[in-house]
Amino acid sequence: MTEVIKVSTPQHTCAVNVTPQVRDVVRKSGVSEGLCLIYVPHTTACVFINEGADPDVVKDILYMLEKLVPWSDSGYDHAEGNSAAHIRSSIIGNSRIVPLSNGDLILGTWESIFLAEFDGPRQRKVVVKVIKED
Ligand code: ZN
Image (cartoon, rainbow, N blue to C red):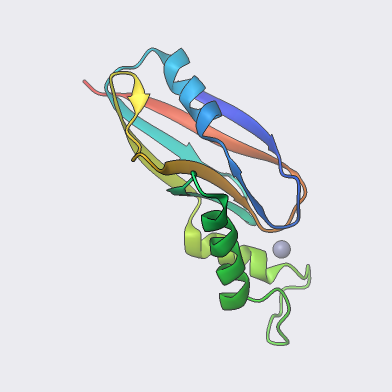
């Protein structure tokens, strides 16, 4: 079963918690044991799993990514001007796999799934594929 979640990212750089929507897809699938693939089909957005309880954690991740991969750098060649967004997304990666048990995602107590936006605001897609264990 595959579903596409649509997300409107509110800012140029931000992370949107998509855990509730992913969880809904898993529940609707009826799959109890298996895997959930979360895939972001974009080159300037990506997906990561980290703390969702304290919003300062995500804020700090975005802050440090800006320092590590600055938006402006005279060495960038890409004419669109958003090389930093491509690089940050490449570093983080555009998919995650979460195991399923008893029809739900196995996430740690503090973990959430985030769509990371680096060149918004935009309409983004998150592809969720639920794979049943034999
Ligand atoms: Zn570009």
